[in-house]
Image (cartoon, rainbow, N blue to C red):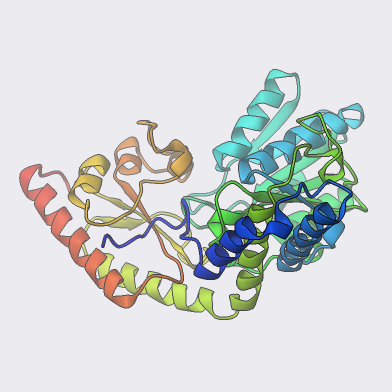
Length: 386
């Protein structure tokens, strides 16, 4: 079986989650619409609310502050476009980082096309930008700041709590894309001073097709809905909630909460063991900060080996060059560009992302495969190696 090292793109569904989804689909008592007022509807609604409570517990929120969505892309769009439009009367200036996920970058670009002004923060060559950069970017007409907790390509972790405190003191809404943090980094929306926070179930061993948006009821209250046509999810996300998917996300959230004291340390040990095996190869460069990064991501560039050729040579391993949302894009990663990598090095990058399902034997296999691939590519197409 192909070792799977692409968990930043999607994680395998945990067996307990899969069983909970299957049971919900087969339970005659859960076939009703959870918005219906009859007894079967109330039974389905109760299970949805129980799942909502599990998601709320994962991030330290209140139950009524969690809105189910189709995933993080919708949650990010709802948070960014919805908040900007709802508060446009108070200002049309927004702040985000140039290395955000495309589901954050594209909403900001759309808002720019609508006349909003966006300040794009640029990190240093290790992917870090300081809270002082956020503070310097704020203006009297700033209404929203959006920063991801963990970068999906490099794993770099930003100082979210410090940034949140700056935004709270300035009366500016703060949105956090916590997709890669869930189950790997502590998430506490109160300590972060987060007003909005996005999650995706399939990034922490839940099902695809369901996510959540946290809205702080005291500070954010409401955003402009992207969709209309129903009163579900506080009329912020109309449409029938998929009971089985919500249940699956709830179980995944509960497992992530229970395992946060165990999984990150084990995953980090595996990732560090992989890096120990790879860094001894001349011309293998680490992308991102060497310490301030989440446990599960290792991003490297390989001098003297082109990225697509590397992927082909590593066909017995499931890895990626970066975000799955840009996997068909031939352009080098903008994230690595902002870290100062050349086109050549950005194209020669590989992202290994691990999870609790990986083993030391898989790490050793992947290291051997990469060593062999680099030796082969440098032999058939030699290039300069530093």
